[in-house]
Length: 97
Image (tube, rainbow, N blue to C red; front, side, top):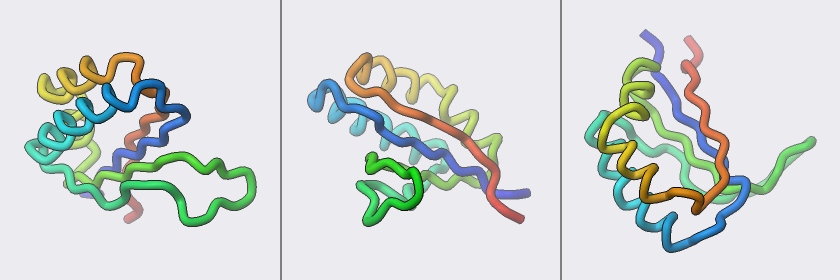
């Protein structure tokens, strides 16, 4: 079974206070679901048509674990705390074999 990766890029941060509240709740919810942060921060470089956006990559045992983490009550509570505090792109992808 391939690992699952949850990739988030932040297009805009509208409310840093809401983002901080979200981050605290989300970190706990994601860890409880078996997620491990492997990337957190701004890119060191961007190429081609890349954008300099905050990027988060979380590794899970499988895509199913990542999907379940996103749908979990604990993570949904974190999303409610974020509200309109940030504009993001969230993707869940399977790792390479």
